[in-house]
Image (cartoon, rainbow, N blue to C red):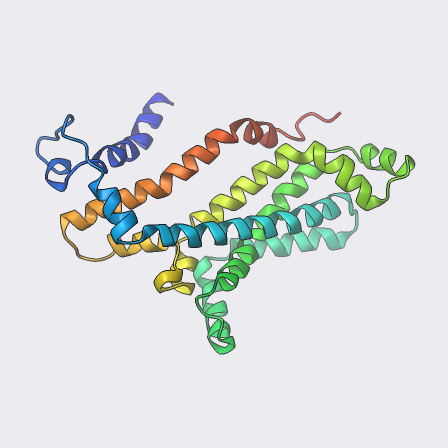
Length: 262
């Protein structure tokens, strides 16, 4: 594990380190471990390249995708966890097949339709596609969590006067909260890290951070421009680290939800 951790984290640690250096120091041979630090790369990316605008786009798309995915996922996951008919099984299989399709295949189907409807490069367009792609994963994950909650809790709540919706909202959801947070985090990461769909459906000022990074890395540019891309990559990575650290307890309890029934 120690060897794997060292190999896996070294590129990211090196990326963080050189993002605060000038190009001449970042690519010096031999490497300069104690070169002067500078925020010029970040200033250029966020101020001169207006990376903050892409950050706003990413925040809007990711938050909306997560909210819609969790709302549909909680309702569908709970219903499928309590439903005993064969239809539920085939719905889950259909969702799994849809999720297993390569994103490029789905993009080929969506793109002509969006051109015809005139809804190209808009927030709602990208949100709808990301929800459609990520929703099967959310439903499967939340259904597994709901399966770990005994039916007796629902029945006891309804005996005490709650409706089915009341039992779900007042009894089941509070118990399921760690699982919901975990599913929400995964939904957030799937939308936040998406590159193919975002780069193809959004352009110009409407693009997201990950798609904008492709412009830095995908073209033949100077070493200085490459350093700007490194600073942008660090800017994209930091929110993920903060988010995972902030919700680590919920993630652990959510991933183990259903292991012990009570």
